Image 1 (tube, rainbow, N blue to C red):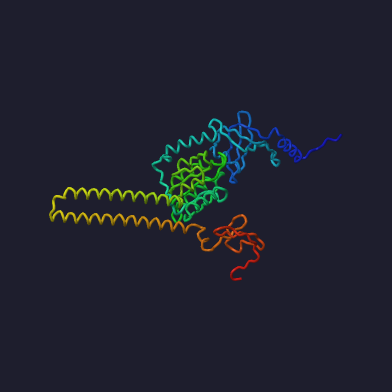
Image 2: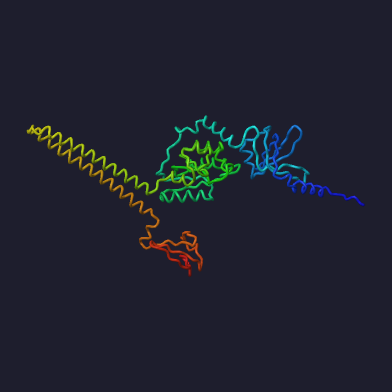
Length: 404
């Protein structure tokens, strides 16, 4: 019987299938000391895991590299990696492909979080005395977050609903991954140099895992927030999520939507506050007026027996003071009434449905998107005409563009 002769490629393929095809070498943990740590320009990280008896090559790909860099892993540290064994055919090399990392003797991300919190507290970054007030009458608001997803939509929708006149400027950024911390820090710096000058910055993202939100615990992001001359609202994740950005920001919001509410005052709230102040002023003026009246009457009673020219002169002066005081109060009240009416009229003009009272209508697609150009419709497309008292459903029969 003739012995089978294997090619090197055949043997290598047998090894690869035996190693990578076996469930025994999948989803395993390997503990060892880090050596030969190399950060490749591609974003991948190569290293070795060793103990006092052996060494194995290891790597973690770019998509998961932040799990290693976030832990500030150095050579000589003992770590535990989770992943699988692989066999690289061209070099005949067995390696460990890591997808997650934990640090032995140093703890997990929570321990690093606590250490970093102590560090920034010692630096004074969390002191309330250095935090800037938030202007709820902001005209220009900057958003530093990803340009896709629910967070940005909720932010813009809430801001425009509460204060339609506000100007919103988006500085789109990465919110997770190895380079996200640099991107966010750069965008905060750009926003500080932006014209027109911004009144508030909202920095954050929507929900995610503890690891997903880790970017907002990085020192680069924290320092950029501290150095910002513009007040910063931190809006990361959901209510239970706490990041170090929340500690150093001028104000912490539980969610991006909550941040939009904290950064603005609604027209309804504004009118209520103005009405409340108006009533308070009226009560104040009435109290002052009544007290003055009592003083005048008391003065008259004390001098009623002294009927002479001097008293008559004083009486005339008091009458003049009384009339002048009443006129001043009435003028102040009138000015406040005009101010309230002016605010109400301007607020009414901001109502997007106001033109509907004059016979105008909103043209909307079936998915409730506003149509403002003939380029956004097609023949036989179903649309809605929204009027002040209802909706009309119709179909496009023809389209004609101006100038054609």
